[in-house]
Image (cartoon, rainbow, N blue to C red; front, top):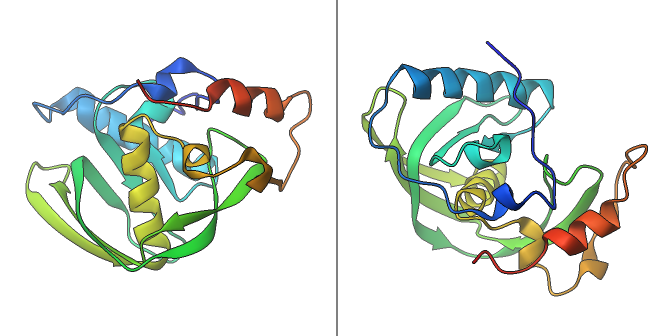
Length: 174
């Protein structure tokens, strides 16, 4: 397996809507394996293919103490409730904000074998599902904020100027 480079704002590839996967072939299987390794290495809970520069509708989610979810062509079909919870992103390291997310999310997708799966999730998995599907649609969590003033620093990255990257990468996903 290989570790893939994770894109950071303001990389324009993060704003592109991912294409539907037509065939689950060896290249998609390799992508999934590499994404899982990359997510683990980065200590993330989820990772979308667009975050590693691949414009395909593939994401992986694995919360601490949880099972790995591999979702191909995921679609959120129902949201229930609402809450504001802290959220960060591997494509915007060092920052978090309180983001409005559903309490319960229902989604459908294909698993890595191409079988349709339905997922009903709450807590961190529901949050990750919404977050990763947003990535596949070219949406970053900062787009869901009323103001960039809602961001707060959690761990500064040496040599980076995140404020400039955030401002340059924020906006429409056109």
